[in-house]
Image (cartoon, rainbow, N blue to C red; front, top):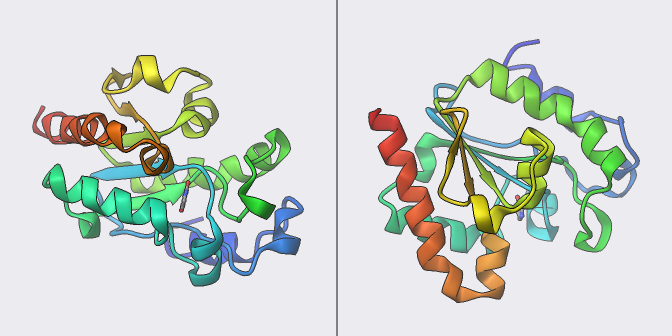
Length: 177
Ligand code: URA
């Protein structure tokens, strides 16, 4: 498997029943040589329609936060734990995450980004088996993972924006090290 083949593989995936309700799978997007990967939870309605990650309300918050942290979205690889939309935007089920995780692991392995930013408890749990974003946010784990809140949490509570931006600024520090 290589990086060019992976999106097609994900778009044709039938490893879990989300393939029956999705409009489009959302493999993720960004340059193949990205030094930074952002990992969210799962596509929402807009992402499902367009086949691109973070293009709805949470995406607009993410874009604003990246801007405020002086990070360029075009230079970042953006993806999710689960690549297909769960019906009614419910949380992905354990089985769905387990079925989909090999796609994310393959992306991490093939892209080999310097920094992997886990946004929210679903990403933190799926990738590192940990919980507690609010106590771990802003922290670097294993010199590679950075934990922060999910942009949808910022949509619900705008007071989290400052925290989100300051966590994202940590990415720049990690890239300098
Ligand atoms: N929320 C996510 O976790 N991912 C998206 O792509 C959009 C919203």
